[in-house]
Image (tube, rainbow, N blue to C red):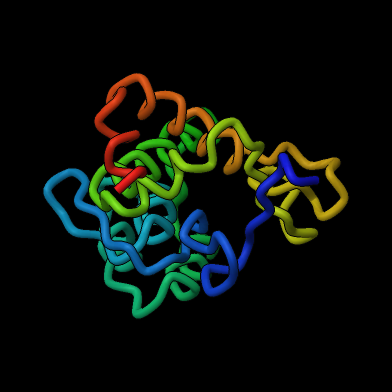
Length: 158
């Protein structure tokens, strides 16, 4: 179990891995209050609904609005959702140096979004889920190690 980092809630241990954590990101010329805002809004890219989600008062409100099925979901959503999530996470962990350092400090540990509420992005609560959010975080961690090399190690040892 020591080799696994479990997270879910933005206000608990490792909560900064959550898309709901209050770390704004700049993507496509706009500032998004959280990665969740960006992710949910991209379901409606290029429409008024995208801006409605971006302006949501909280990440929870952005999630609720993004899941409203009366809004016109982009037809390619299932094909692009992983890349959209990765784009949001990459922005978050490159635009916030401290978060990047924390992610890199996890070394080779497995990162798992532990929740029974989601078996796609999370582990389904019992490990049967896909844990795509954790998988993407680990991919980004590897990319950042390659991109940053020894400079990160020096910051982590300060």
